Image (tube, rainbow, N blue to C red; front, side):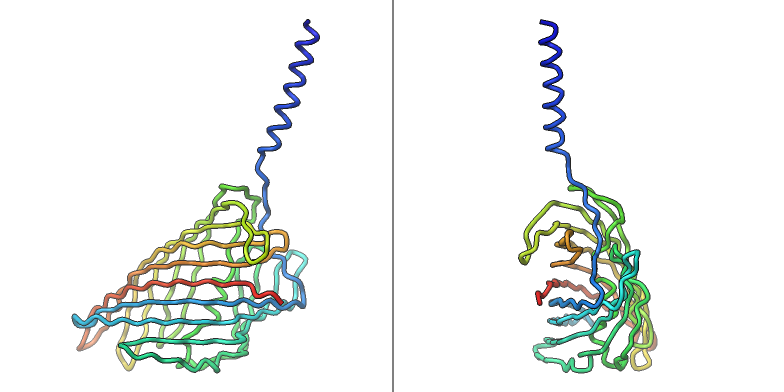
Length: 281
């Protein structure tokens, strides 16, 4: 009888160990894995709605931007750091201001190259404009887009339900000054999902941003500050180390103050919906 009890206890221990292993969550080491000499293409779309109030008059603007972003992998180090060369294959910019629709000429941007180094965890470093675009025609900043092109990973193994934080700082130089955009992200690994034919990890995120800067237009100093919030989702092919799709919804409130004899404060609200998708070649 005693031997039967011991045998049963041993059997149950094996069963418990086995079932526990079934429910153990798999851990993932999220890394970008670019191939030297390979070219990647992404379709990037954004729709922006902006409202501002000037001297009691409400003014509304909308902008739709559609790009195809190309990057060539010049080199990959032993540590996984990649030397990338970015350019635009195509760019379409449509605006609606005060009831007038305009399609802007974006030919100045096509083929202009921007170089950057990207770590295996998505941190973008050493952005350099190889081919410059005239300061008066900087409606699209490829350098700024690159800085937010890749989701940032923690550098540690994560499992479903884990979160990690990251911060990104952008500096947009225009109008004789600079606007600094600081964004704090929180990512969460939600699970798996098939996206654009790829087996992906689904990674929702939230972010809080702060905008602060100044410039000058036609001799008038401008001061801009504001805050905003965003939500979005990243779909990442962990096996191939590849961003497949990302989307974001952003809302922010800003004020633009002018100095001089006609000083004023202009409140601005802005909403942006954007996505980028891998184009298979």
